[in-house]
Image (cartoon, helix red, strand yellow):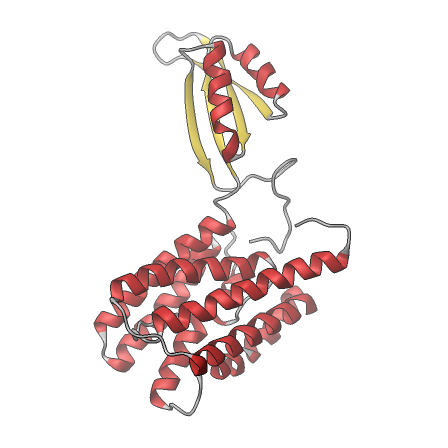
Length: 289
């Protein structure tokens, strides 16, 4: 949400983070805890501590363990990260413990739990990361590592960290099945996280046609960015212009209709665009994911 009003912008950001915290707490109490599925990050470590020392609740244990990582985060991203992460960590921890006191979810099929738990966990963490917050632990560590490993997606970084914690869970409790379910869940979580953070941006099309000039003109009239690339047919050897166009997902049908209306024999290649920056799309920031 882009707004010139800082109050409305902050309300939107913290409202979204609160929703992410609620989904995170529900996911943990519904899918992971009752089925003893290993979780990654500090929540997974808190599960181990809670199992060994039940007097330490999961939520508060996560909160305490995050303090050193928060100090490192503030040095890199400033006070805004501290405030947002403290808020998200505190709210999610309180929601986890509060929901556990109000209702205990029964166990379910562990495969269903790790699939749906992974999806919801990924969505909740993506909502927090997009608003500049984290629940601490692996997602905060992944956000900091992103400065060093720019080519690795935020979801994959979380997956690597979580897999290490899940492995520790398996060694501690000698529970291979629960650890394997946890790895499945963490992989699904990383895919869902990347889909929310990166996947909603755009698609890209390469259009090869003998009438590329007319096609480019019509696409420009649709307020789309167009680039003409020089190409040569591999079989015929004829020189051709390739139309390169980035567009939002909802525009794919009218683009195909426009192109085939000009040239029914046009060769159209539609690709997933991992991320598009520039006018009409995203903006680059050193703190971006």
